[in-house]
Image 1: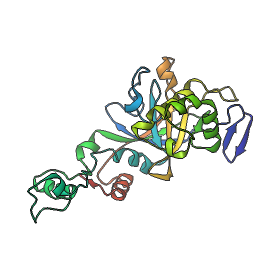
Image 2: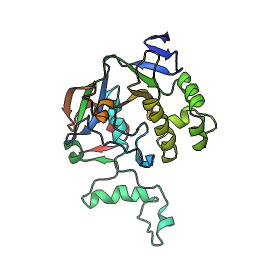
Image 3: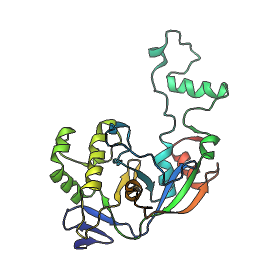
Image 4: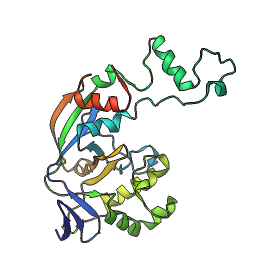
Length: 265
């Protein structure tokens, strides 16, 4: 492949996109055992992407992280969100001196007294239906580093109409790391262009994208499109290396739950 090389990474001479070699890297993914890590729901082209994940395209996309801790970070934050920190007096006209000052504090105190789990709790049932999977990515090919400077420049040049439609004057990391509904049309549009239209200078198509987690730049995430599964041409070159139960004392699970101030059961 004709490219400028920076360590193990590269810049595609044809597209200007920043690339990271797949090279059989390991990726960690938390998924329901009922479906396994390689059976995500297919997305339909005519559907509204507002409910999709950030780098979904029509077809199937799997997500994972470079570390087990990163995989847990990405899923645990979407468990039941915190109640709003609204003043009790703004919601009720019969607030007593014994009540907490804010609604979220009141809920945190009352739920355990009623035999229920407090917000930001992870139940045994949640753990029981999921495994931590270690996957092996394809031995050959490339992922697009979508937040690389070259990639941002190439996307701006090639997808100006999409950016205008989404109300984006200049593309920055802010838009690319956002999971808000307002940005779903943009990020899924970029992903669809990369998947369906981009051919790299070695004649291959990118496997997917690599990007930093919004929960911290030390976590690197991967999104891989399952081209063969979608085309009905066989199995994609990604394998399950190991599947592990998620116990209450599983080290990366405990570490992330503690850092995110969550209770485990």
